[in-house]
Every structure is written in C-alpha cells, then in structure tokens.
Amino acid sequence: MKSQNIIQLKSYQFALEVIKIAQLLKKETHFEISSQILRSGTSVGANVEEAIGAQSRKDFIAKLSISYKEARETHYWLRLIKDSGLLEPNKALLMIEKCEEILKIIGSIQKTIKAKTE
Image (tube, rainbow, N blue to C red):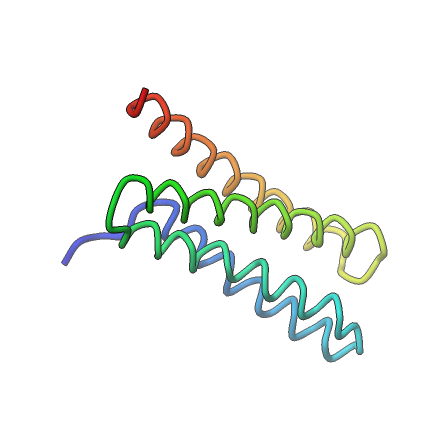
C-alpha cells in the first residue's frame, strides 16, 4: 500500500478539525459561518485528492489551484471567526497556523510544477 503524501495527510487532518469547528459554530447558532468554513475547509483536501488522481499534468495543476483557492478562503473564515470571538482564540490561532502551513505546501508544489513545465 502506498503511503500518503504530506499534503494529503495534512489536508485530511485539517478537514477533520474544520468539521468539529463547524459543528460547534452550528450548535451555537452561527449557521452561515459554520456552513462556509465547512465547505471551504473540507474542499481543500477533496481537491488535493482529485489532484493526486489527475489524468494529466494540466488537470493536476487545475485541481491543485482550486485547493489553494479553497485554503485561502478558509484562511479568511478562520480569521473572521477568531476576530469576531466565535472560537477560543488559541484554537483559532492554531487552525490559522495549520491553514497557513497547508498554503505554503501547496504553493511550493505549484512552484515546483511550474518550474518543471517551463
């Protein structure tokens, strides 16, 4: 069995934590933000998975680009959640840091792929 790569593993773990945050926000009647963070936060890993199964380099780049955009959106929602006080500050900061790490990894992969295609 092939082992998972780092972005696959980190984006999956991140999605699990996003689900818990969304459940908490929904329970506290912050329905709109809970659905936004759930959608974008779980989409990061879903698009990483699609990129891994891509049929071509172009398809891989497209799926990875979507994953990066979803991570950017998630970063926005996490900052908004933190600054509005909807989540414990330490938990919010930890999630923001994890999201930033995912953004760096995806960005690095994108740069590597771009350098190989030029």
